[in-house]
Image 1 (cartoon, each protein chain N blue to C red):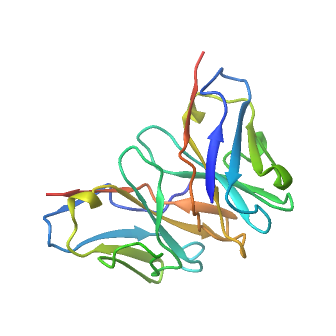
Image 2: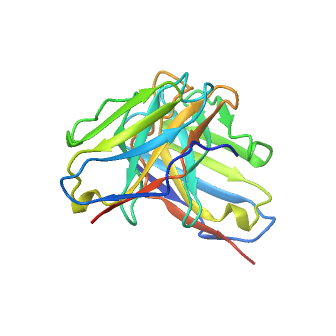
Length: 120
Length: 110
């Protein structure tokens, strides 16, 4: 299975960051799909997951600004983060999570990542 | 945002065993599996260890991991230059209902 992120590399402050992850090589059904980000020079931060059924769970740090959607028939899932600030500047990775448990930090494989810069 | 605690860097000569620690608490490491990820410079992270101490196929056996109580550790026996990377631990946190990552540890092979 392969994952690839797409979306704009530059977003203005206060606007909405939208990314899509295209999945190829396997079905999306019965898996948890996550977004993870990494600010330049910093560690990894889990943003949230969406299950193939559409059930979601988000990191409390971004919960009020985040929505996720999934289209298993079209093999992609998406992220929308509103009211962005410079603190949202990061490389964003889409990843496949666990198949059996929502309470898991299994992530394999990872997309190549996409750098999103928040700047005016 | 709480994180799991890792040392920022470790180093050692080829042939010397190095270890990377990851410290948490009872709501994360103490009650859930720990995973380790390797991130080579300029690339996406890759799964290195799953369910505390298991290696995916293709991961060399010089990499090993263990867990005791609320701490975990990753060991590299005889690190090579190609092992120079950042290593991050991860675990689910029951109180936050979220995944936590360690801050990452950079390995330098002297």
